[in-house]
Length: 340
Image 1 (spheres, rainbow, N blue to C red):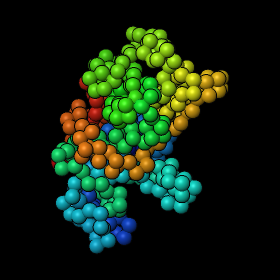
Image 2 (spheres, rainbow, N blue to C red; image 1 turned 45 degrees about the vertical axis):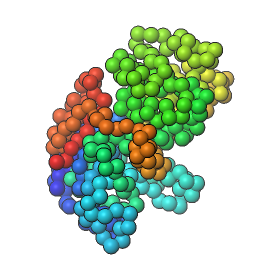
Image 3 (spheres, helix red, strand yellow; image 1 turned 60 degrees about the vertical axis):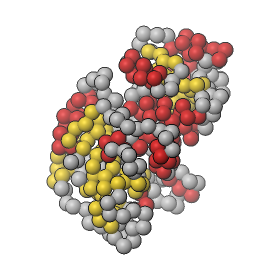
Image 4 (cartoon, rainbow, N blue to C red; image 1 turned 180 degrees about the vertical axis):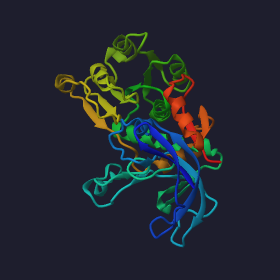
């Protein structure tokens, strides 16, 4: 079989791999049908993801069909359409014992620390598989994984109906964040540099939109929040060098800020900016068993993932896909690799 491997930063190859063999632990063989390109995949490709190891078969947004199981597999059967959890954990460290396996001391993420989904077949435990809603195409089902990231962030944020929320960046991650944050009943304000993204966010539940290139962010937030208080919750989906410092500056007193970036370059913040407002700065990483929650929202009609993918490429054209992503074409919302 073939896979997409990042040999080292900025070097992508299509490589031949051995077919996976089922064993006591990895008791399900999945034929991959589609896998998304995420910002963290791009970071691994360019060498800016601090967690990645090389060489690596990347891809952590992966869906496919079960084509073989062992007798120990109880959760899924041959023919099932599934999405695969990217998190693997030890189960006994402090974080795991306190129900936070997504930050396990010995965490290994498929596509980051161990090989992921940009390959034709994967062997995984049945417990890491979740059944896809029948109505979802494989390409659209890839979006369940970034939706779980949004669910995790909103859980960490303790989002409430009386919050006035700023989502910084409404690309692929920010769009998923909006889809979850709006379910809380909170007022959502979005900020970005692309007018088309901002307009789309307004059409999908945002109360206000700010183009930070052409508008004064501080002034607009005073206008859009009650009594000019500022956001009570800010979620950084842009993850640029300056975004965390910006969110600290504009936050309302006693606010919470969720940071999700994975760059290891320094960013400038001040103690005074945090302490004077008694802000909570909370990291949110991956997801903590949120797949079924996302799937249940789809089944309940509260979450629509249909035809939200902007571009698809065959996985053998992965280099073209990553080059196109790097072009920053404004039409890009989400790029998916297909395996048929």
